[in-house]
Image (cartoon, rainbow, N blue to C red; front, side):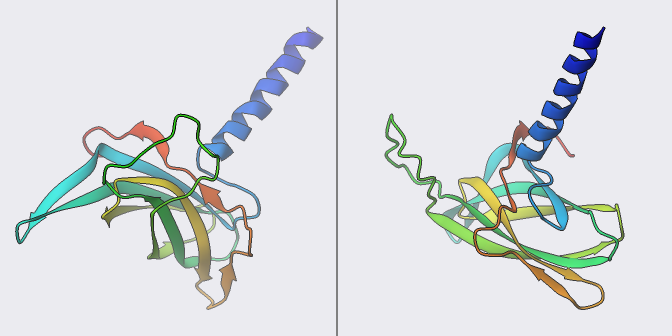
Length: 163
């Protein structure tokens, strides 16, 4: 019986750790984030004869603190849709060739969640997202420290249809 209890406890702790790695609460971030691709991965739009690649995502935010959150800024890092060389043995440097910072307007009380749709022009894929800052309703601002681990990767599951 004791072995079963220990196994259950270990599995519960491991599941929480996996949730955090899959995009959720990491380190000392004041809000939780989760990014999900929309079905179809990328969209192509033709404007004035030019084909434009657009990465569509949904970004979920949830407030982990007692103060009301009024906004957040996040940096998206990834790759363009151009053809590129991919080595068989990756260097592990984890670079990207495109990045963009996006500001979000939020109104989150304690424990509340909001979903924001997002269309990132020129992105073929998003590799990771860094939380840069959080603005509270009282006007105060939290900013990520240098080397902060407020970083998530988009879920690898695709949305089919709507949400």
